[in-house]
Image (tube, rainbow, N blue to C red; front, side):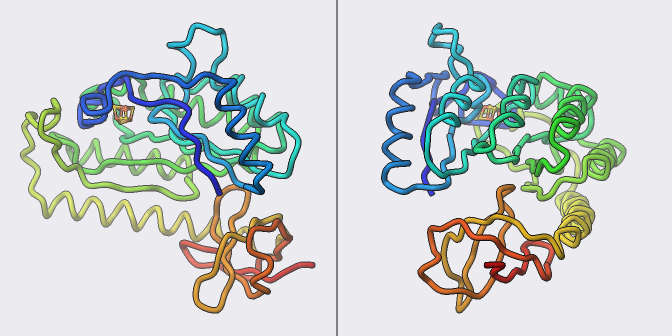
Length: 289
Ligand code: SF4
């Protein structure tokens, strides 16, 4: 597996985040330089390549070359070789339908999208300075799913943002129930000195935030388990990426963890696995070849 930084910094100033202050404004690397680096990785045998940036969707805006993130992905996905291409992270306000179309078009681009929503409530999203509302976010999700019914969707969510009411928290739960993410990265709001959110009134007691966090995890864990149960019986291509105890670990195209028995020599190879069981967090499989 390899990770390639395609840009640095961030222009977004989400009200809870310190990144733009410490990493500066967005700077994109030139596409030909990235392409050369990726070609070298493919030649060296890397099979799972992730393009990295705080907000990859605004890649190229500062270069003025007429090359956007979808164009960059397409040019990498056209390279010869056996690999999966992924990316992290996307800001929903800059995620374009063109990007979803590009993911759908190229078999080498993994059908996985990490699209942080942070809150399901529009007042909270505004206070977070996220520049989208829940309807715009859902429109993107619906578009992506219409183009790719098997798209694996993951996201980030913050519980207990300053001033979040019980009702506003319930909007987040509703969004999660509606979208049914494969997995969520969940955080309880924690103030970062020097950000606007750190100065906002925050009357909600910690115990209440913990309760909301637990409820959210319960909902997501149920959904993750239900989604994982649907994998059982399917045979899918996985990339064996290591060992845990006496079992091999592998990843599906959507990035789901699969545990199975097999020879160590398979590490680093694509194989087919039949999914025979699951937990909330991983799948259990057996070699299908
Ligand atoms: Fe930028 Fe992400 Fe931080 Fe927002 S949360 S300011 S998009 S790095």
